[in-house]
Image (tube, rainbow, N blue to C red; front, side):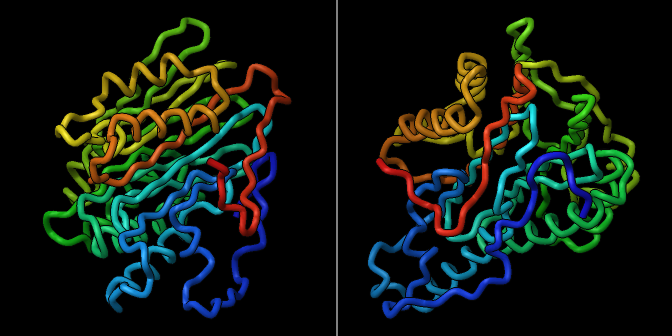
Amino acid sequence: MARLPGDLRDDGRHGSKRRTPPDGRSASRRRSSQRSRRSGTERFTSVANPDLMTERQRELGDAGEVQAGLLPQRIPRIPGYDIFAYYRSAKEMGGDYYDFIPIDHERLAIAVADVSGKGAPGAMIMACTRTLLRMLGPQCRSAAEMLRQTNVQVARDIKRGMFVTALVAILNVRTRELRVVSAGHNPMVLCRHGSGKALLVNPNGIALGFDKGPVFDRVLTEGKLTLEPGDRFVMYTDGVVEAMNDKNEEYTEERFYKFVHQNTTMPSKEFTWALVADLDAHKGDAEQHDDITIVTVRVSTDPQDVVPQVLGPGDSHVPG
């Protein structure tokens, strides 16, 4: 795979053998409810006492671990860019997805997607969509072509009534040009450092799987913009803005946009955890009903101001 400037090397976790401790739980399952210092991935845990888990629940837990392994194991370190991502599933297996896909030596594709179905069917469609985007991305000339070719395969195989919304942005790390396409997904929020304005980047497009090609291709448009130092953009799924409290009140798009605008100058990691804390404060004791995914990128005002975001083996605990 093509390599971008910065550190995108494997962290050594892939292909390693894991030893299961005497209690029958893998180390990742025992840490599933803990936050990572350097990633933003949290796992749903439905049963506190593993001895009470049914075989079905164990299988779902194992499948959830496999699915979590499909998400990026490290966040790109690119000089001049401060990047962070967060994911938390609502059930053992989620339907959200995010990824960082190197296209060539200076372009990085950033994808966020949401499958209409949850549980095992949604997870399977998510895995297929991930494979297609990773396989097709480096072969495509544009973000629009990337989604068009992905849609052909998804529409052919997806179950009737299911679909995938997706937002794909291809960032040229040298020129700071950003090309954005949307398959019926939530808009990207862009905060301009110079003007202080928050904008919505929302090109036309319909969800993957609705149409096998003609309508999808005709509707899809690609937006183009140039980022400036201090600019931040945020990609997310509807589990953010639709997070509900025990009164069935949503977090709302308005509150989300306001948070992004007011906190845009924070380092990306702190920005993301602050947003998650605000979501949890709103939710209170209510059950999380949808997956939550957040990916944010800020252009550094100093080209050397890069925040290392590297996942280390076993690094999965955040002190309270």
